[in-house]
Image (cartoon, rainbow, N blue to C red; front, side, top):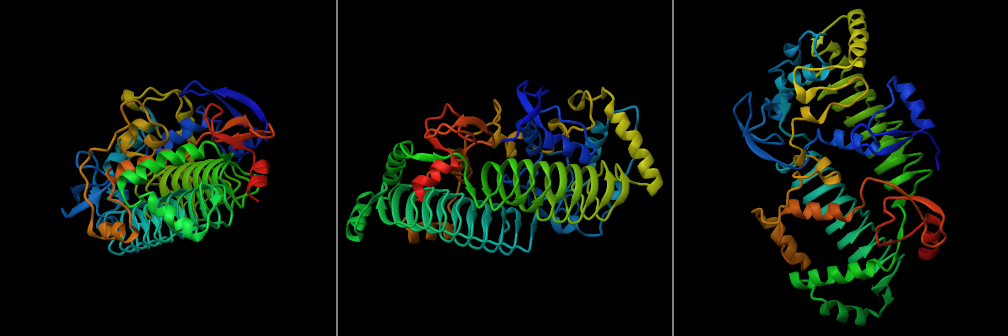
Length: 525
């Protein structure tokens, strides 16, 4: 375990947090001061700038066409259809303005953010998948978010290369699965979590290579097991019919029984697959990642969630990958981008961007919004190379001093080194993933009674799979799945078998039996 160099008090929640030697090295490399907020509060602040799942009907502010958008009609922003946003019908440099040294930076950036057009949704190379956001290469998908290369999937989140999956999240290369989370290479799996290469089963947790199993946990390469007990094929099929899993009542009853069974079984301290020297939760094929949650093919990342696909040497990031390197306090940043500081939704070969949002293929820009192929710009105003660096030095020095803006909602003691304040986000807190991980009073919304429809393809899926129709709306079903996942937080606790100290996302106050990796592998191998 890394040892803390110093402890600090969070300026947001007043909780104590540690600073490690590797943290200090990264701050020096990125030329930023130490953070004043703890890792959880920093993540909450970033996530409050992203609406992934809430879609609204509104008109395009350029063409007047009806469209779906992540911005509700009452939001005071210009919103363009994605195809029109990328067109040559407008130029982000037309919104450029001088920096006012008598005012704070965040206040001026907020004004620019409200003026420059935003994209309605984000998607690329999708077919018959209009009701989706943050998707690429999807076909015949409906209400699928933050996903790519899927077909015939409905109500999904973080799906990759899946086929015919419904109400599924954080899963890869799965087919015809229902209500599963964090599964890889599974087929015809239902109501399950943390499984790999398992099929024709239901109510599994932490199982690998299992087939025809029910209500099992921590099994490896088993068949015809029920509650971890071996049966013959005939006995298994007879008992399966008795559970009435084709009925809503049968499913709800067995959910309760499986939960009772689960609490009696050992739990892995952290869900890791093929990792080396990692600390966090839900990490797969990654190396040297510290305090990361949901990492896939990442290396040398710290304090991140959703670091994936060749994400390297990044810190305090959310959804950063695909060749992203040396990013700090960034959200939704990647595709070959590097040296990014305090950025939101900046992709495609960007470099040396600071305090920018929605910029693409740009470099050496500060405080810009909506640029494409921009360089040496500040607040969307073009400068020469010499003018840019001279202004940049002056602005950073200005941000280092206490600032008292005319707008109380954007005031900040010191601006330099802090991510954008949540008050200038274009979304309501409940619309963002921050509300799922860090619920605040009066921001959590129950969706059980919200009207919803069952589309024809979905109905056909339930009939084919022998599954009862759900009695909750898709959004509440999503929240229920997210509540099954452990929080993005770690506790120092002891293994319940050998008493070794471990970092785990299971709080010591929770009822689960938690084992360190060594003890866990002894019981499953």
